[in-house]
Image 1: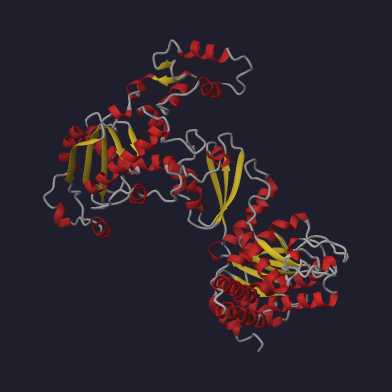
Image 2: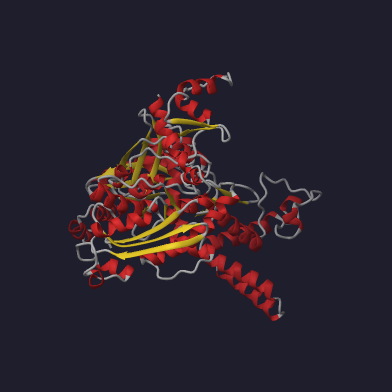
Length: 635
């Protein structure tokens, strides 16, 4: 037990509170406030590896006592390396730059080119300006190392992305002396993540630009050292503003996440690096083998790897998940769409504790014109239904849908209020009716026939006939411009731009959300299969794995059998996930991202089935067979 607590404190130079240590020992520490401190004093008080710091209220590893010194009285050595590649296991150092600073001043600088014993890759010469001729005759790392160690002395190492530089330095130390460098280190990249979270990127030049540091001689060791020195001074000021004035506090702080706790991910990095960069779903497991979380990814390696980074965007719940991830297992899929569908199935089946209900579904929005009402209304919804309505979308964000609703209400003065109307001349219209943005059918200010004409004009735009509306907007814009009402003319121009965007969207997606019956063919894993998704009445009705184009006839027969049963029925709860995912995919699909075929009716013509077969053969990589079939497709 003592060994476990000592290992924990070795990783935490600032120590840990009694409560934190008791949480490691007991599942339930108990209600007696005196028991915990007495227990720890009895357990650790006689062990020389531990020390109790009364003023801080923490237990510490004794080996860190020397780190409890003020930052302004600490010597730092800022280091940067240029290398032949990105991995210390397969690359060599070609230049070392360093600067010793103390008390806010640069005391001494160090710079040395190093002969790596191999030819430089072309991209390294392009990046750094260092070539083979410059390295010819330079000393080897074995000759440079003693001089660098003398310069380093007992200073605290500082570097931007210190893990990279320390990887090479420790490799050199092991080769020369058989042991890694014992020096503590601060990473300006880690510190920047905590101290300037508003930055989306924290590359050295980005952080330097944020602080107004002049950038020169970039990607040469000493040049980058001088930039890092200036960045480090700014970060020290931010540490002081947070009340962090001691070295052990700064060493601990750089490993903290945004929730104030230390960032730790038990998942082995080498396991993540072996994952494929393909679409799929991943399962996270705890140390006890319990399934914790299921997610989808466009690239499994990059997505799972993002959990290893102490990113400012991680929520508190995600950080808690990360601290418990001990293992990952993945399932490769042929596309992002298949990954999203498999993720929804897996979450529904296993209900992992860190998957919030519905959080895995993409965020989309539709505009709905409720044609079943005597006075149809415009509204925004997140799903298609079987009710009599006309839909526009899907939109990536609700805000985009709100902009279009605003445009349509301004143009056609349709109502947006909820519920069925019972026109009453004595009723007081809502604000929209009072300002003329709605024709106020609630107050009987427009006849049912006239309101239907407003709806018909709106439907004409949604059906692609937007020219009358565009001409009217252009006329109003010119009138405002002629009267020198330029702000009003600019507002009309924004409406014109939005209307033209709406028309383009309807041309590409209008038939899908209008008909709500279509077939999607997607590539499978390594082109050994294809995924067929059949959408009927707006919901995912069938999902089949296709291994040969000949299966298309059976698929067409299944569609014939099920088509009518789905029309005119409400979408059930277990169909919501697939509906959301397919709609989101349609919103963002690329021109080459699978195939979409209309299903006009239950009877699928043989010519269409032949087109499905050709598409299937294309996805399976059997294009020659598809070309042969092309001649069989009816005119």
